Length: 454
Ligand code: ATP
Ligand code: MG
Image 1 (cartoon, protein in one colour):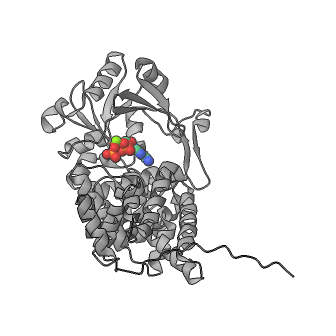
Image 2: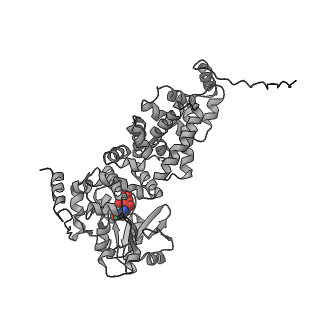
Image 3: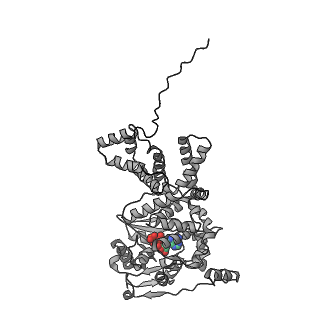
């Protein structure tokens, strides 16, 4: 019988699904794992050692341990400790206390930031009444605040996935596994700790994290962990837009954007992030440009190049913009005002789902507006367009549109050559343009003399 079916049957039996999971602590000695001090950054080691020397427990945890065990290079290092945020802050002059929902400490070493969190516990398990103030859930089961401290084991079981609940101890070089994370790493599985539905309701962003890790690590999402996602996906609309913006950036800038996009679609998770885009695509707008842009982004990341959030957002919202732009033109708006109206509308709607900081929405608009200017090159226009601060991004966007088959090829190549040509070459290119398309020259209208009424 397929496992999904078994789960469904179990869910009809009272208590059948929510059987308490039992986990056992395991210690993996140094000769049985590949985490070594040489792959941990100096700042992370410094923080671990200083906490230990000051009498606190401190472990490397999360992506740092997971990625090293997988033979990869961690993006950053997270540390868990039994010192309170204030105690950590007192130990490091170069640190700052941040966060409200989670209070954590950032220890800053130049460009590297070590995130230090205090072991969290589960308020429901304590007799302490004051704990209620520190751990709050909403009517949807959403965790609003989570600052109840606990011991290491409680901390492990409060984490999201089993592979993220592995700890490395720099004192005796052991890896400590509380939730069979090592086994799941071996089987390449993303598995939530505890009851999946409860954990997603507490924090719906975990659904996005499941997708992000599955794409990034090329893991499967274990059946019980994946089962509730499609149905619970709309819960993401309760998450503040600023947090979703951060998550979207993480989702699409980890180098596996196209795969992530497919998974988000598969699990109904794209709609809460980009509602207008999904509506437009469902109404028949193609998404080839999105795919092509994500493919390019993935290739750039693989080459160690940077990617800009505004380019990615310009692509993700392009189908919505196209649909709205066309709708306005069909209603009789001239092309330019229709574009401006559409831009305002699409961005206005998007910021209700994910915020878009002004420093990104400005350039995004410019990329879109320049798409109309790029075909008009006659006279001095090409030079004006090329001098625009967003020209490079708009030109890249044009190339993506061509590669996606949205417009006929040719214009991109023209701009490629124009940028490489010397002055005379550029003049030649412009003079050859002459006849390709009607030259619209606006004549200044002569002032109409009003006839004096007799
Ligand atoms: P990466 O840094 O590579 O994106 P990571 O696993 O380190 O992956 P972070 O966002 O840095 O992810 O979080 C660090 C750790 O904190 C996670 O590994 C996990 O144990 C815990 N964590 C983060 N977000 C959540 C969450 N929403 N719910 C429960 N635990 C979480
Ligand atoms: Mg991390």
